[in-house]
Image (cartoon, rainbow, N blue to C red; front, side):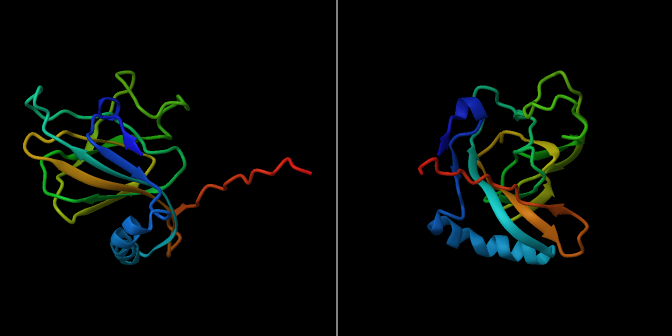
Length: 177
């Protein structure tokens, strides 16, 4: 699925069900396994995979913070894999979904005040992991391209410090007799 760059401020973005797309899964699975083993995370499910490429904002000529957001409301672990070196940082903010009263809002506007907790510079091969309840944003690069692969993971740490159980999927019953 290709995402509209005017709506998401990235161009292009590719969204796939990683576990059903075997060609991409075989390519990326060793990175996922190595990361999960390194942090002692028992992976149960990957719910989403997006590969996003951002180009230089020619009109703006300066970095722009993109939409402050969470990927989904269900608690999960975010894995960001930086494909290349770039200057468009990933920004983590001080708010989580628990801090915002409006239950239906994922993309925020000027109604909420956020403070930057951390800025991560994309470096080729770097992996960033964080609690998916944390509001975050990308910023557009000022030189070159920024390419990031984002995955939402479900599972739990071996020490049981954090659990991100996969959502229960409803099984639709066939109405045929």
